[in-house]
Length: 214
Image (cartoon, rainbow, N blue to C red):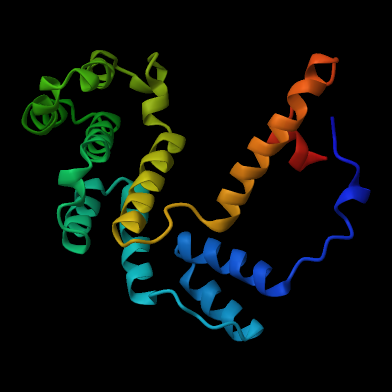
């Protein structure tokens, strides 16, 4: 069930609110140059710490591009104790480095790294299944064709890099999600609630992807 556009098309949207949403996204995603251009062209006051944004940007891209140990090193410099407090994220980053070694067929080095850095996580039950999946990659001559191929994907690296970026933001007492992401999350929840009764009458449930294509 869709909402009649007449119910919202006359609602005024403040330009300052739009500017704030755009700035939030640019700062969250570390688009430093674009943020500076945007604030210059709109005259909106720039409140983000550009130096910290550049540091986050470097860490994010190092993780995304596979230089995970360097990303960990810079994270520990920028946000001491962050990874010590966030074991799940630390595990994901170390696993990402392990995957990189497997992808480059450095299996001996990957095994040694796993024994030194990943094995201690095996003492905690919630990591055991994940460890088994990662270690299973070593059994395949072509790990990208294994049942765990998704662990080698760009999408997986993106997921870990995004988690790292959000954790650094939260550690700096900044929102871990941009304003536009929060709006989309809230909109989805509201529309799903509104469509629950309608779906019982034969209308399809609300899906954000379908809505954005409409």
